Amino acid sequence: MEYKTLSNGLKIPMLGFGVYQIPPNQTKECVLAALRAGYRLIDTAQAYKNEKAVGEAIRESGIPREEIFITTKLWISSFSYEGVQEATERSLEALGVDYIDLMLLHQPMGDYIGAWRGLEKLYKEGKLKSIGVSNFYPHVITDICETVEIKPMVNQVETHPFFQQTRNLLIMKNYGVAPEAWGPFNEGKNNFFTNPILKEIGEKYGKSAAQVSLRWNIQRGVIVIPKSVHEDRIKENFNVFDFKLNDEDMKKISTMDIGHSEIVDHFDPNFVKLLHSFNI
Image 1: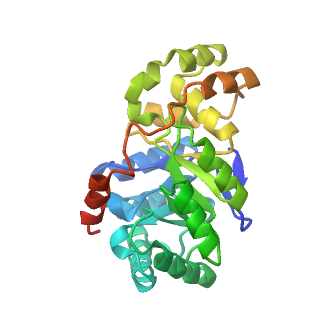
Image 2: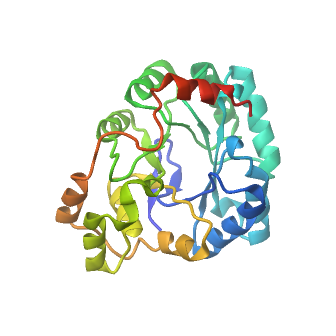
Image 3: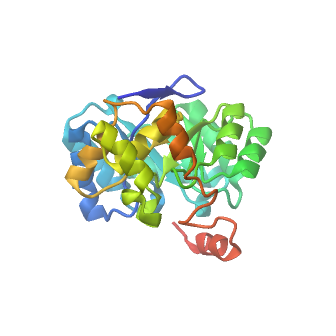
């Protein structure tokens, strides 16, 4: 495993296991499979409704709590100074833990500044070992970094070879914010797993297109959070630390960028309204 040191000195694994859209009744077995494969970063959220199953898997695994890095996220409906403190208590209870390694604000909407000040308080109290944001594009990551006392330590955004977030990564670097990737396989869109560039590079190393794309992000300094419900894929996604892409490989992949998401449009007013309609 490779690690990144966050701005507060906390070490985070460069590869984690995500449980987005995994039903609660499947989550426990998937997390146990991931832990058996060697993952030590598990990424969940209140909106995923599977925090309890994540906590059960961690306890059943027998792995000491301090060896596992737990990330979860708070939803817009909790975004206020008091609201995030109450919501954090719910996550602690659901996970069955007395601290969370990384808490993220899930979306840059609503009173995210007030919510952030609540996270700062919880961070100072030790209930949260690090705090960050998710889906913050360049203008909002700049806004929060210029406004708050403690800058976000992580910004989890969609990033993969088709959407490389080059400008956002530069801004994050300027503020000392670690980039983290959700959707590192573009949810399979645009024939991701059979892409000729990724396949050609993979053939050199005996790796799949998925493994090449994960390795590419890791070498860019981006923490990656792949997800699968299949144990063989869970193992495959973890097996990315025994090879390195060369400069030519990295340059070839850089040509794949289309500069926008094919999954969601955070600038679509109807999408924003939809997110606000969810009450978690």
